[in-house]
Every structure is written in C-alpha cells, then in structure tokens.
Length: 362
Image 1 (cartoon, rainbow, N blue to C red):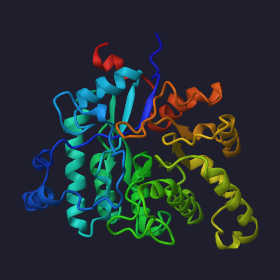
Image 2 (image 1 turned 45 degrees about the vertical axis):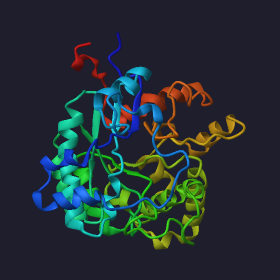
Image 3 (image 1 turned 135 degrees about the vertical axis):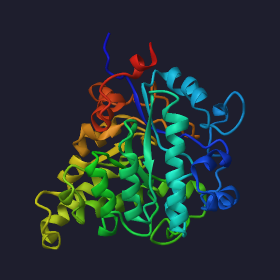
Image 4 (image 1 turned 90 degrees about the vertical axis):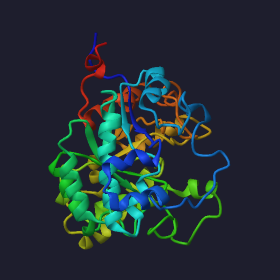
C-alpha cells in the first residue's frame, strides 16, 4: 500500500468555540478586552447566505469548525483528506487592530491554543503560525517561537493591510519565514476593515456580493509589489501562498508585468529575470473559489497561460458557504493536472510526503 497522501486540503477554517478557550494562554491584562471585543475588527458586509455551512455545526452544537473531532469525521474522513492546513476563522483581522501589543498577545495565545487543541487532536491537522503583520519585528519573534513545532507548516497573515506586502517594512517577516523554511500565506476577508483602507482604490463596494467579486484585485497588488520590490531576490527560497484569491487573474498580471519590464526595468535593477519567472517560482495559489467559466475548458486554457502546473493547490474552504467538494470541483480540469492540484503540489510545499495513517495506528 502506498504511504503517500491522497488529498491535502490547504484551507480549512478551524474556529475558537468560546472566547474563554483562549484565556489560559493569554496574560490577564488582556482578558477583559478579549472577552468583550475579540479581535475588535467588525465585519463591513452582510452576506444573505451567512458565512458558515448549516450542516457543519458540531453534533453537540456550537460554531462550525470549532470541534476538531467532528471536523475530522464530517470533512476529512468523508472525503479521504489526509491533511488539513488550518487557517483559522475570524482571527486574521488581529493584524489590523490599532493596539499592536494587544494584537501580538492574541496572536501568541491563539498559536498556543492551536497546538494544544488542534494539533494534538489528530496528525491530520497541520497549523499556520498566526502573526500580526502590523508589527513585523514582533511577528518575526513569533515565527521564531513557534517554527520549531513539527506540525506548524506555514506563516499566515491577513491580506488586508495599510501597505503593499513587498515593501521593506515587512521584510523581517520574510527573513524569519525563510530562515525556518516556512511559506507565508495570506487569506482574504479583512479588506476594508480595521486599519486597512477601502477595499478598492476608489472606495467601498455597496454589498457583500460586490465586495466578494473584487477581492482578487488586492492579491494582484500584493503579488506585483512582492516581485517589483525584489522580495524574491532578497529571499530566494521564500514561497508566498495566495489563499482563496482565485486564479484567472494571474495570466493578465504576468503579461502586463513582463511587457512593462521591457521598457521600465531601470526602476527595478535587482530583477534579473522576467517578473513572470519570479511569480512561477515563488507564488502558490489555492483553488477555492476556483473560477467557473461557461465553457469548462477555458479553465484549462488559464492554467496553460500561467505555465505553472506546480503552482496550484486544492482547497475546500470548509466550513464556509462556498465550500468545494474535492470529488467534484476538479472534474473540468485536465486529468494530468488533477493529482498535482489535489496532493502533489502541497506535498512539496509543506513537506508532507507520507500519509498520517500510520501515526493514527491505521
């Protein structure tokens, strides 16, 4: 029997069941604030569908995604998923809290809680080190503190920001991540919240529908910045994961950057190759929410345009409303690419080369 994983889900949202759960890991001076305000970053937009799947409520009640044993049974075991990369739920906005000391304390408490509550529950769970990107020096220390845990496989931070991620302000984060061989992932949902400015250059969309449609523009801006500011020249082994940001926008960005590089390369003398080369080497994308064109083969054409079959990884976004079933969502994609997306690309990025079944005594 093969010991290789079959499916790796790169975006599973584990939730805190109760604010009280974080208190054992949090200094007492922050208890009242945490209990009364939580991350302190209110949602701007209302979704008529809600955010969570109704059938994902644990058997004993509570918040979807808050019970590691129910999630394993309801999602991982049902679909034959070997590993779930945990990305948190409702906590990433801590990067946009105005009190950086509070945000740092919450991030550290969350990471300790994650280890004790989730990573000990099953070897199928792999963690993401939460950081407060608004304090890069403190974020680097948090990466150093947590990176030694064998089940922490990436760094994660909000995609909403006051600055573009290529700027040198954030470089201590990338230096620490590269030092420990960890990719850095960003996840949407904080655009327009807290310290972050409007989610578009021209202001605020009116509805959740309008806001949700336009989220990839922020990812385009960050990827453009990371390449043009020379992050991948300075940190040549760093990988950057654009989680839940879509895929179809990437060819357009690559073409535009390559075209302009031919005439404007004097402004980026550190770049020795086409921008698209750096993107293919260093950027990774996840499938959910994968675009659904009227002609399914157009999606295969998009992958061909990107020219990087190694760049795409499967994600379900469980337990959110727009969850993707791994048995169905990749059917329009050409067969030779499906297994790369389902497992091989994530195996390589997160160094998950063997199945966790042996660790569970199966």
